Length: 251
Image 1 (tube, rainbow, N blue to C red):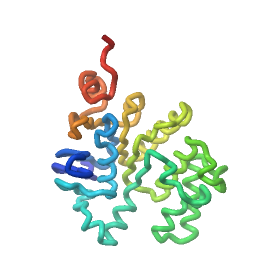
Image 2 (tube, rainbow, N blue to C red):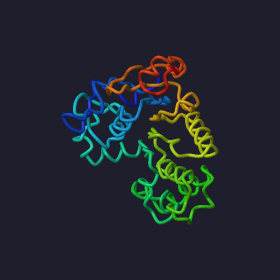
Image 3 (cartoon, rainbow, N blue to C red):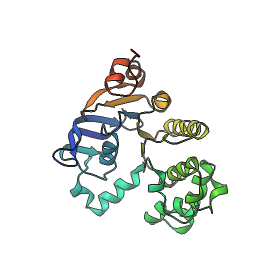
Image 4 (cartoon, one colour):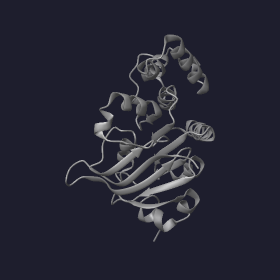
């Protein structure tokens, strides 16, 4: 039976007393699962990803990651933080917020360099990752000169160069043209087949069935409204309408 990657018990998160983002979320995600977090804008999807990535801490409840408590205190421990960061990759919704190096190759090398890998090992990871995503011809290009789809590929490459166990993606298809969107879906399916744990926050229902086995629906009250097989969730039109994920029937 696959080990649990995350266990969330009664997790709440708020930006202030009048700005709740998540309320009493109970969630378990096992190794190798592909999970879609569904919800309307401001339902809490990005906040949940930030908690899973250790970029924020819950204001209520507990999170366990890889069998250990994930807290602000444990993340202050350098050994724990380094081990955790090595296993988690977070692809932001806005690739421009993630890309900062002068060239694509430098962008992909940044993470392995932070891990303290030797120069030859870093070069090998950069070569292999660029080849995997078909980015070799862009190695010396500046990221800000790339198209939106190319930037998204580079952002994914910069995460994959760390070889994480878990990939967190925030609205990965936003702003992509049809060709780039189709490529991304195929690529994530490949990673899914390779046993990576993939957690995708999205309201793009057209790709959910191809990206995930399981769907977790967050309502506009910031609570989990449903958690089940993706086919059953997508087939519940009433749920999707209530969650503001699809239009109601015309009058």
